[in-house]
Image (tube, rainbow, N blue to C red; front, side, top):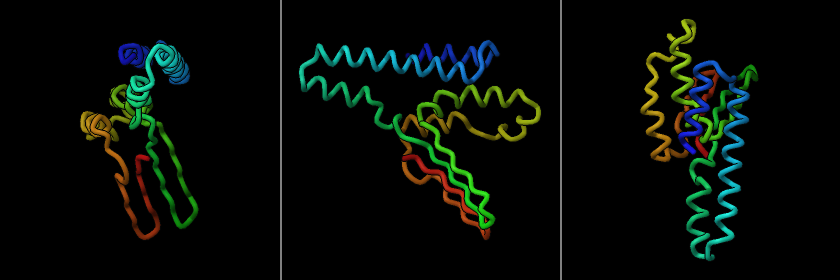
Length: 142
């Protein structure tokens, strides 16, 4: 499945499809995997089923990256991103942004490998908590 998602992301990077179509394709791939897992359950014993279910459920990959920005002027931002999406889009998004002159200056110092490594090592909980006089920024994986 990773290869198939990689192909979808390559098509986005090459401009063959837009992000909305990529999201639909990735959802279809996930649905296909869920259907396959259901069929596997029907052929497994109960103890095998429990073990395979916990591996297939994704556990960590089912969590959400939550970004919260609050200000005294009530200019609040709440962003919830599934970790699966973050991991799938991280490398491609950085590559695309690096090639856009207006965005390149903002992403040039981002270590994508470090971020992917953090996801693969299941970084969890509070990641960023910044409080200044008027604003609070919080990034959490839950």
